[in-house]
Image (cartoon, rainbow, N blue to C red; front, side, top):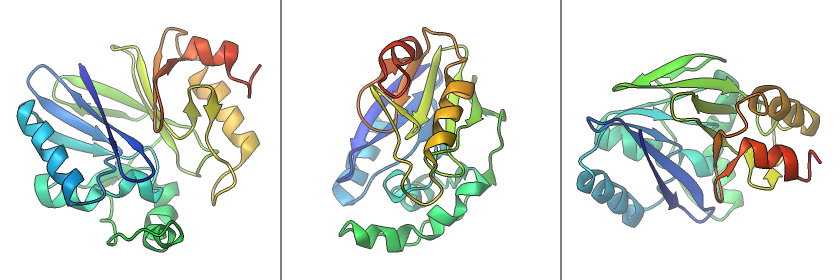
Length: 211
């Protein structure tokens, strides 16, 4: 599986594009905010000869769903997310104003994802892991085959997600990371929603929230 990372919008969200050998692709957290970023995304997809077939959201904070309407219009894909995060999606337009940003009403999901649900695109599979604490319905997407996990805003390199927003709870987040992420193989590569990649082993040993 090929893994590409593009950084979009003023809040600098990592948008991940995963592709199998045939070019079938899954998009995780499309953060495209404006026309320039939309054009950049399409150019990248076209240059890599990719065929987007699946759109996923780790959670529905505005910065992670800015591009959902664009993806629907361009590729006909609605996102898949966890139902517990619907209030963040429906509040996104108002939330954007607090950041001095604007956005259109994001589309409704095509499907809701549950804990331990398997998702497929082309020849590749991801397992959704429910990791609440940053939001009620935060998800991580784990590829056992590739030894990697996409953690959204639950776990970062050297840090963890905020827990002071609606649906957040610090102790719940710590439990989620310990019980759902730190049980993965230590060599598992962590691709977070912001910032650089890390590994489960490194975070278990050096993350200040767990040392």
